[in-house]
Length: 106
Image 1 (cartoon, rainbow, N blue to C red):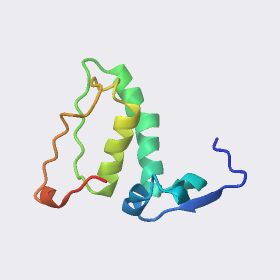
Image 2 (spheres, rainbow, N blue to C red):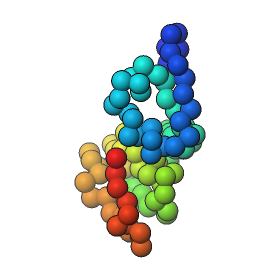
Image 3 (cartoon, rainbow, N blue to C red):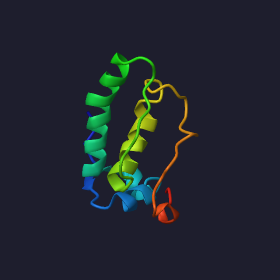
């Protein structure tokens, strides 16, 4: 449970903006959240990790669609499930997209 006393709670509709502002002084003083982030976090923590723990060998994860939600799922997997899917980092992440030239990680 986050400490909400003397904090401003901000729902940031633009996850790109939220990512770009993550290290700013404003972001440090507020509690920021985004609906994509909440949904991706719940998916990973409540469903995927349980599945990964039940299956052997380690799972291969394919994210079909790499828009903002797909990117957010990847971030949550990197943050919370590296051990369960059998890698200590996502150095071998491949992105296959006809518009992958336009993708930029912030």
